[in-house]
Image (cartoon, rainbow, N blue to C red; front, side, top):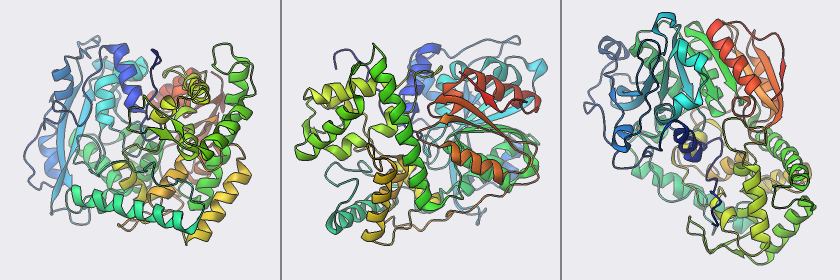
Length: 530
């Protein structure tokens, strides 16, 4: 594509697809990804049924990370005591925590030993988001480049693939979650029926292709109990935790279940499980619409943007109208799409609005959005096709999300009303959002939700730091404000920038998070800049 790197699948569920590769390039060269032959090498082959106590008795058997070894990735930053490269291990936990002596599954862990053993504070568990992002891979490949040195000096950094994800016992489905042949935003009863059939078939493929019982046991409360099994296996009385995006929901669930085992905790890019399925869509589409407006202004005013000097919103509206009449060719698309319609183009936005021009860890996605729109207007929508949520695999993302965030649709009239409200709230972008992606994926999911919408109401923890950008297109500031009200003694820090999570878009917020995680002192200021 003329030398322009495509920014693929960089949602709150999938940012590691490019993000890990980019960060690993900073540290060294990119390692193989989950699903490759090298990455598929198990570290522990026994699946006997230990209790959490017996796991702790032996502890993880740390060794070289197979993917890094196969790729010869030298993730070997040395510290004052010779701390070396990432290490990996597997532990086993019950498939169902309601039956702890029953069948077990495997969790993949990775560890970056502290760079300053003399001043070690403890362990810091890190979850980069999702649901469905492989945290063990993230830390093993990119942890040295990703996390502030201050954290690496004071903590053993622990990445983990949650149950159902990556190199843990994984959910495996068939094909993409959303097909380009099925409308994303149904406009008739027949189209709504097609959405429901797609959801049911995709869910059935996940059940069929995964370990029996796994899809019913990947909800976030089970993953939070797995986190406590990791704590026990590491021999720690308490853990510190940094959770981004979906990782905030995992963290708050852990804090609700195990408040006395929390050391320090940062929840950045927050989910609020109290909002329910309708406000889930309304609030995210409103936030994404505001960020799209900021993108349009930035692109028009920025010489390096492909639509510089133009009315970007009008160009966008005209492109959607054209694609609705006649799908636009995508001759170089890598995902198999040969043409794209207006639904597919809309579903680019949750990916390509993620990282704004102030992003200091990830490359900004906004230039790619501008370039993709310009190319599509010229007749080649390949770049947009490759960055749309339509056509993406959604295995663990769907399986976990449908357990925690069920849409509770009551028929076509209900779906139509939600879409109509989205168009009112977001005239140019409509219901384009991960919230609507989840609505489609879970419209007729075959496994009942195990953790439906409910407030968390967390008490008894040390003070927890919640952070957000002011203009987050994926996890709106209003969710962070709601979560702040639900966690007693918490503090909310807002970075006055656009983009998903303060960690990626504000060096000021990232430094405040690191200082709090180490010291336990909440920041005095409640705002940050770039």
